[in-house]
Length: 143
Image (cartoon, rainbow, N blue to C red; front, side, top):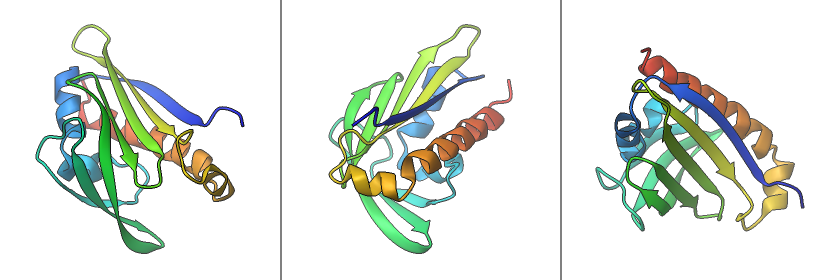
């Protein structure tokens, strides 16, 4: 079975509250998405535990996904579950001097069809997307 999680971490020159505000607003997700697939987000202006939100996506073709927030700790942790069971998780840890240690994780241990995700190359592709997302966040808050 192996580890079915892909994580990357970066220190961003912004306090957790500012970063969390971006993550908790689905309309802001296209600004930080490094995968190039998120076109727009809709839902509540601020996510909370149990909230659902939609994402207009494009990967070869346009499609829409629905997500549900499954972990939530204000200004520290947010995770949402894709309808196919895998999760996107963000952990924010203060790192001193107004900086934050940001860890984004693609967790496919809960996926309904993990073998399909592996065959389609999503773990590798999502690791690359996470690295680009963290670079975009870093560029938004140059310090």
